[in-house]
Image (tube, rainbow, N blue to C red; front, side):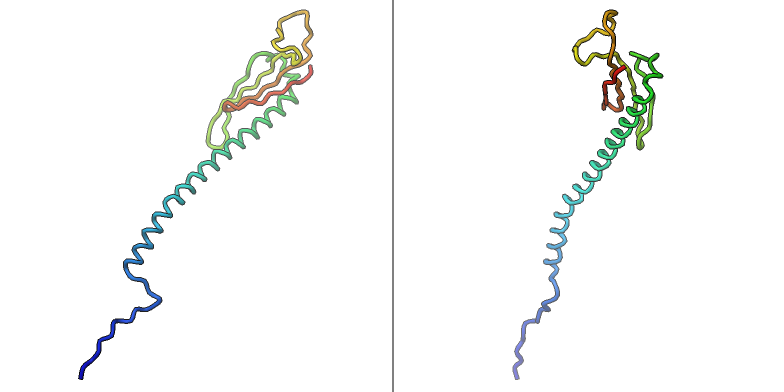
Length: 136
């Protein structure tokens, strides 16, 4: 009696070795750019957080200067510097009170015939500056 050989029946639920290797390769190719974008996103988030912290400190220092500039008139025209720490970094903080005439550009503050009616208050941290004019 002759036996008929039937081809082996392949399960519909399993993958061949080649299919598995192909899937792993494709997963690797796709995951590398995704991982790089996640790392880049994390770095930009940290930079944005530092910028926000610096901006908040600028506003806080400006409000303090606006509230106390009358008592600091002895420092008129002399920038005051100090070092502050924001996050994990140290920055130079500069505050300055200058005579100003916002109506007349290039106004010479040493002109004895003019009465100074405005002062410019400036606060600088890490190359970011916040300035405002106040009446004296």
